[in-house]
Image (cartoon, rainbow, N blue to C red):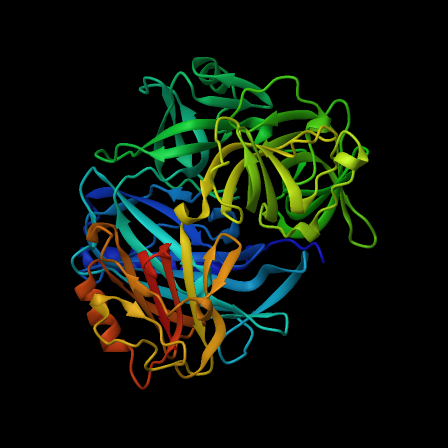
Amino acid sequence: MTLVRTDRARLARALRLWCVGLVALFAGCGGNTNIIYGTAVISVQDTSGQFLSYQVGIDSITLTRNDGIVVEPLSTPQTVDFTQITDIPELLGSPALPTGSYISVSITLDYTTPSIWAQSNGQPVELTPVDTSGAVMSAAVITVTFDPNNPLVINSQQSTRLAIDLDLAASSTINTSSQVVVQPFMYATPAAVDSTVMRARGLYVTQMSVASGFIMNARPFIDQVSALGAETVNTTATTYFNINGTVYVGSAGLAALAAQPENSLVVAYGTLGNLSGITPTFNATSVYAGLIVQSPINEEISGVVSARSGNTLTIAGGTFFTPLDQTQYVPTSTVTLGSNTLVSVDGTAATGLTSDSVSVGQQVIIFGQSTVSATNVLSTDATAGAVRLQPTRLWGTLNSATPGSASLNMLTLQNFDPAAFTFAGTGTSAAQDATPAAYVVNTGSVDESAAPAGTVLQVDGLVSPFGTAPPDFTATAITPGTATEQELVVIWNGTGATAPFTNTNYSAGLTVNLASTNISTVHYIATGPSTVDLTTLPASPLITTANVPQNNLQLAVGLPTVGDTIGTGTSVTMASSLASFDAALTANLNATNGIYSLVAVGQYDSATNTFNATKININLY
């Protein structure tokens, strides 16, 4: 592992694209700059792949209107680790756009300084991205054409949501040569306001004109220079605030926020609210500001505690960020805590926390003074710094349960295999140290005693303080794996298959032909980290959308573009109905364009051997 700065060399390319958009815009208006605007509320996320880190650059995003006008809502390139926006999308911003009907969106990804890592036997392995010919990736352009029945319409003085999702599972195949084969795929669609929890980052502006809340200018990810549109952040009497490490609730938090310097960095978690005006609203459940978000003097390391010895933590899968806008994935680093380390729990006004509250398996953000040794080992001194304990996800199969307690056979803890952790010291004695095969969870009011052994469970919560187990983990939410978003994934090799399904009437559903030409060994249904090979089922399951409201479907077909001068390209056609999906697949799946990947997202019904899909992404060669 080598610590390097993530550069901004791609800025010139993005600025060129932006200028092209402006020239096209003004030329199309006949020189008239009296343009009517609305707002695009853009969110970005990732449909889960098998990666610990997938850090690349977003060089640009461009939108094409139905009259050929091209606009660029992203003025500054962004460095993004897509694995960090799997469960919680990032609100990219709310830029002003000329009104009209937009027919497509393009995103340019920069692979010149990637940081892509996967896990092998509990150990991180760095991967080199290559295209399907084996050439090292430099850039990729993905163009999504909206369904004609569902374009992106920007109305005057109103906000419209655009959801962008890079599907890593459909885009990537990890081979045996420490490489990941990339044929990038994403879907993008105008979306209604829903209950999706998002992260919104920006600069504090004012509380004037907001009854209970504030206005901020969007500045997403780790951006240090942009201002991508204003957003009104609404709060309530129960909204959690963490300002410079001090926790507040409700109006007391707003008062503390108002005392911060102008343009203080703010991060809010919540959901989109009212989009009827030109400034969108965001309903925040938690707000963070000041030194607990980003410090001008301290470095930041976020990751998972994989071991602890005394006051020294080992951090796995760390993202290292400096005040100088440097960011890098760090597979392993160390952190030293002390009695003066400030400890808080995200979203909870907990009291009495000390450095001993930090234990093995916990997801953390830590601020302190970092150094890199001559052998390139990163160490952070947080004895006078701060630790934020973040919600942590445990996946396991049920061993047994009683009211208020359950024993799980751990599958992963915050995406890491059990082999990544050393649990020595977690228990009240060595005999009580956490054991992955019998990981004890405080389930609170949830009773899992009626669930059969072997049931896959997704558990969210916090690891117990160091030296206090059992229990090893306290749950805030428990979800049966069958109630989570499951994925059906199939990959084909070579030039793919031209007849990958046993049926040709695609609107009636899809059934994968598991004996089709060039099918790989990757064909499974994933429930979190647990997978079931399709060949072990009674038959290849029917992938159906019959039980899903048609207005909730997200269907897309991707086709490689030829002769792209920037790099690897993919053209994706969105379908908002089964009929248009059938038409797109029928038109493109042929003797020239074999199938590369199929990813369906939904729930598997073992009783009927059907997979009820809300999303179907098909990527062609």
